[in-house]
Image 1 (spheres, each protein chain N blue to C red):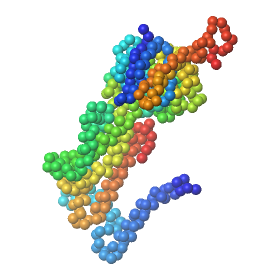
Image 2: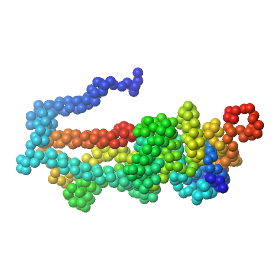
Image 3: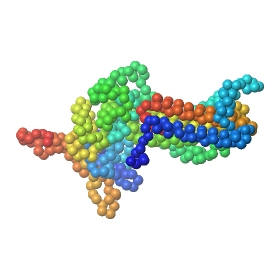
Image 4: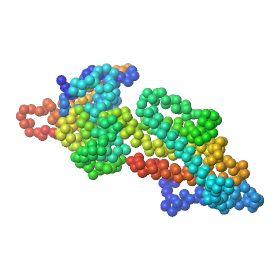
Amino acid sequence: MSFVTVRNIFQSYGTRPILERVNLDVDEGEFVSIVGASGCGKSTFLRLLLAEERPTRGEIRIDGAAPAREPGRERGVVFQRYSVFPHMTVRGNIVAAESFATPLGRLAYGARRAARDRAQQVLDRIGLGHMADAYPAALSGGMQQRLAIGQALQARPRILLLDEPFGALDPGTRLSMHAFLQELRAETGMTVFMVTHDLEEGFKLGDRVLVFDKPRWDPTDPDIIGATITYDFDARNGGFPYQATQEDPHVPDTP
Amino acid sequence: MRLINRTPGPALRVFLTLLPFALALVVYMIASEARLAANPQDRLLPSPATIGDTAVRLFTTGDRRTGRILLWHDTGASLLRLALGVGIAALAGLLSGLAIGLLPHVRAAFSPFVAVLSMIPPLAVLPILFITFGLGELSKVVLIVVGITPFLIRDMGQRVIDIPREMIVKAQTLGASSLVIALRVALPQIMPRLIQSVRLSLGPAWLFLIAAEAIASDLGLGYRIFLVRRYLAMDVILTYVIWITFLAFVMDWGLRSLSRRLYPWAGGGL
């Protein structure tokens, strides 16, 4: 049985179907990129994975567990914006990943010191150690997203959901964020779902690239048909599965 | 160069800041001078020197009968009522706002109710307060509370709703319960806004305080003003008005400094 199973998901807002008949099996440790045109339901699908919304029909299970009714610690998330808490210091944001699960959201003195030390280690690893006492407003967009990813991972989620995490970053920062994410992933072996607008990014980072689109087009009422997964590419090996041969083809693996 | 792109230098800025104050003072002095020239007994626009003498007398000389310096007693009584009223209103606004903003059930139950409640003119219910709570301290405090709480509840509630959905979801993925989200995400983020709203409420709070004191009291700044009105003691009234303005300004400035010190992440504003 696969790690994440999506079975026959339908989602409608009012009478308007957004998603229909979505089925998916994802193994533990896979990186799934989700692409598609605007309004094709890929963000809706991510909200369903996050359990922020519940599907009209169908169910999503992680590791065979009962379908979640609300977001919880087993799902980590990074949004394009507003992913860190502006009223906490950079270190406080990482500590929050541990303290928020306590009844009052605060750690006792000893535990707090230990958590602060751990947070400092995390910050040093993600290159924000020198900004530990600053507020997120003082960070650049790339640094804020790095902090958000570090914060999400500090809660040790089963799956990590990224909603266009690099959409607001400039191309250079985006490249360094790709390297950062690949590095973290090699370290943790995390199962990741990433919604992106950028096809190249999707193929570069993902093991699979899912394309969301409407399977049919009704000329009289285009909104009557919801979107589903229309393509499921194997994106390993740079997205060229059919060129992988037994012999050495004398071309580099990644273009 | 367009007017919108011209900015005053430091010296000119200070001059422009002081200009309206100086102008108001000069206009008053001219008017006062003119009236006093026509009638030296005129009481309507006392000269600044008279006001100064009166102010010194009010701040330093005790009452002939009791020996108490009434201005300080008036100030103490009024500030206590104001602090109690504003404090209770702020606390009520904060807690209700959090509940209305975070909990859909509470929002469905009370949001329209508070919206209607806030339309009641507080001064119109003043007689009811006097009848219900008597003429003592309580009714004055209650008038301030009734006057500004609905605004604070609505503002705080809206502010909580305005917290980006992403942040609330993020907190949930870190395992936060409703209580933790209220305490550690929503509360700290609306505190600067609460201070700002209280600053905006201080004007109405003073209005309600002075109205209540004017109608039924035996001590307080508003009471004194409306008492000496009978003797047309403009010098006393003006001293009190300037004193009240000063107190209100200090409170406003104090709250702003407090907000900046406690919540440096919130940035400036206003």
